[in-house]
Amino acid sequence: MHEEIAQVFSDGGLLSQHIDGYAPRPQQLEMANTIAETLSDSTVLIAEAGTGTGKTFAYLVPAILSGQKIIISTGTKNLQDQLFSRDLPTLRKALAVPFQAALLKGRSNYLCHYRLDLAQHDPLQAQYSDTLYELQVWSGQTRTGDLSEEDILEDGMSLWPKVTSTIDNCLGQSCPNNTECFINEARKTAQEADILVVNHHLLMSDMSLKSSGQGEVLPSADGYIIDEAHQLPDIATQFLGDRISSHQIQELCRDTIREMVKDAADMASLQDHADKTEACLRAFRLSLGEKEQRLPWRSLLEKMGVENKLASLLECIEDLSEQLAQAAERGKGLEQCHTRSIGILNILRLFNQEHENDLLVLWADIRSASITLHATPHNISDYFHKWIDQKRQAWVFTSATLTVAGKLKNFSSQLGISNAQNVVWPSPFDFEKQSLLYMPSIPVDPNHVDYLKHIIEISKEMIEYSQGRTFLLFTSYRALNIVAEALVDSDYPLMVQGRASKSHLLTEFRSHGNAVLLGTNSFWEGVDVRGEALSCVLIDKIPFAAPDDPILQAKIDHLRERGGNPFTSIQIPAAVIQLKQGIGRLIRDNSDYGVLVLCDPRFLTKPYGKLFLRSLPPMPITQKSEDVAKFFKEKAGTN
Image (tube, rainbow, N blue to C red; front, top):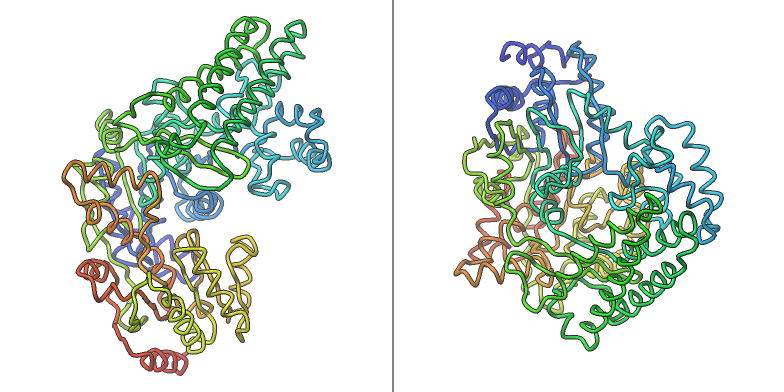
């Protein structure tokens, strides 16, 4: 296959004939050949491919040419859509090789005919009658039912779960709309595809179901390619545990009443028990307090009344479940409600035990209108080790940010991968010439009351030097908002996270060409702004995860109890990966140039600072702001 791959990536090869401006890169060719061998030999590869390597085509080409069934998983739906809608069609033309590709998302992304019909007849959804009518019309026009095709529903809209199904409330073969089901059609297409594009959430959901023997979502495959693999450990942690939300309990109660009216009108006690359960749920939610937060379950149990309210809720659901057991034979919907009630009880009982399970972290995510209880595994490595060893399949884990100080050990240990080929392909960009690292002298630590005053002054200075064209990346919304307020009179257009959607802010940023964008969390990765529109990235401080995160705190305590050092084993590696993601926004192609500003003095004053600096691209470093001014002046003169 090496000859075929060389014909694709060579100067004057197939890609250069179909992609304007395509330039061969040795790293891309080497990566493609290595992945081809991994797929052929059914082995495991962990590969960091620096920004600009061209890793997407480096794994798509050997996947297509292998003739195998390959599942490709991405960290975000955006990349998933890009692969399916843009990259694979490009390669279909360039390679002239016949293959079937399919896109599969989680069921919450697809319109459900049955749930849509229920919502249209639900008086509680009357305010959405126009939107529901739009969805009804669209349902007869769309081929896929993927709600992202149209902007009829906004992300987070309360109507979304009313018109989509869950594994709990799907009626399966008994659904009156089964023959026109969008999910069934998507899964059928996925079964027939050679290349199946999914996301990590769906992949982990499938693995979780398979490991518990409860079925599967994805077809079997010859190989898996995991892009944006640095996100996988956190997403796996979410999916490999159990969780129950107030929304699920609420839906159970309302579906029970709806199915009772339809199939068991003489069993009015069902409605009484459903109403009582909802009342117990409200009382339980109130006992947790009004503040939105994520807390260890142990600390919530110390609050007055929480334990009693949980016990009452459990008793209500047990009574409802008994009534549903008697009604189950009346109809498929009631039978399913009974099954759901048992699942809810099994998870809730984890939180009502006298002693915590050593294998699980119990915690609560409290929101203004809802609560989700999570039982998350301390360690996911055993799960992955078992999956990878179970069958002889190829596994490729890749990302631009997997190494810590040049080593892949942290990533492989998180997933329990011991027998993998480890390769690092550095970015082909010339960071020595294209970039400058500025580390300003700040006389106080980040926890000092005056720290943000220094960040504000440095931000203003950098924005002037770069004439806008700046990302200011923060580790907290508090810092973001304070600095945004201080920059309100800036001469340059100001884009602030939270004041518009992410896609709108990025579109505006690109179109202005001299804007300043302030972001946190999601803006640290997956953002691609090429050219002069983004010429400076400032990071306010080392992105250590919030110490009050219940999962992180439990992992820290768990490791400390076993004599480990959680700071060096958990907190520093995670911060290094996050920092590298933020830095990756700066240089996106060979003609880009820019200044990276790392404000945190701990990079230079703390011993662990060297580890962070060893993880960065080879950039010239300065502590003089006049060097920044000189850099921009010189670059302006050569462009």
